[in-house]
Amino acid sequence: MQIVPMRDLKDTVKIETLCSEENGPVFVTKNGYGRLVVMDIDYFERTMNKLYEAAALAKGINDADNGKTRYGDEVFNEMRLKYGL
Image 1: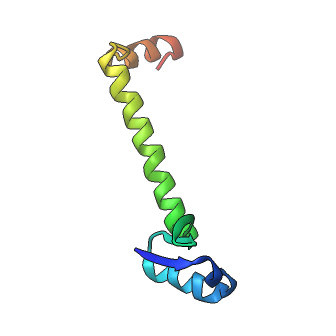
Image 2: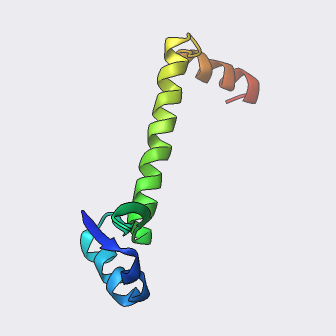
């Protein structure tokens, strides 16, 4: 985990390099306190994809827990009848 002071944001090349090398977030502080997080776009996209996947899994588990599921063969039979497959 990299931590840099706010004044270092002026050196954008250095910050970009830190983000690329860290392969994770770079924390920016102001007066010794955390203020910002900067990260490489690839890391951001990977992180967001993991969050979307986790949300989808949580929804699926919630549906299963609440009986909002059906057997696959039942669904396929309905589709065959409906669409003449």
